[in-house]
Length: 343
Image 1 (cartoon, rainbow, N blue to C red):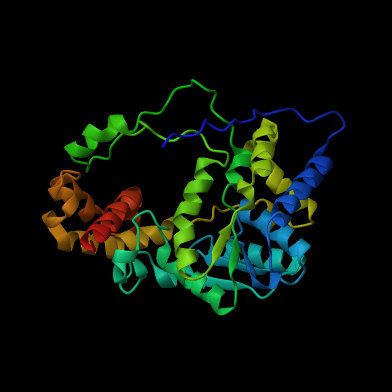
Image 2 (cartoon, one colour):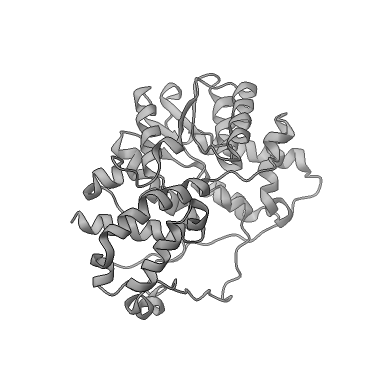
């Protein structure tokens, strides 16, 4: 097997003369509509991710405008300090655009690694690389299927309209290992970028997002569609002038052009799942890792330093906020160990 040549990527450009904000937003809307209509769509059986973020919101609005009253908006509600803001912003978009009935799940009711959740109850069927918030995402997938949905349109790949590509031949970041990693990991660090596949048309971040989301949706009979990965959309994002990429300015201005209020266009609080992962690691991951002790497969195989890991687990077990600096690593360690024990 031989890899194909790396995909060519366009560099940022300048807007042509007499092209202003209104014309650029109009061009973006037309291109989005074009990418959406390329794919077979049954509006009454299609859900659109509407988390409130710039990427998914812009796509969801385009779908709702194309199929008034037929597209089902869906989201995991994050709760926490920014939860009310997320819910108010989503409600405003839905009321001012015109969707079918909303479909949501409160993520706090289905914490990662919770007993009875897919990752623990069916570990043999779950990859460590599946969606981190698998339990909540699966609950949402089930809710969508209960409504007869078979397609979910996602905002994966929207970051391309905000990314400035590194010049070819620029510096490559050398990976480092967390303190709890064993010698075997450190020996492998030099091979991280060896024999990797060439550059793809769609951005790698979008492909990774699809990689983690598609299995859980497919298990429930749903298919993920990501219009931002369309080659025409990708090229548009690559050529977008830097000033329109910065802070996803184009996506913000498109929402403003649709008459949405400032609270939707420029929310003051960041909306993410960080606080939920803090609770999950504090409440569940530390208990599992304590129970396994030094009998982890990852320790036996030399991938983890038992003493450093044990110290980190105790720190994360103190309180959710103490788990924050270690949440990603401890979650991944727990997820991998669960998968290994299911073999």
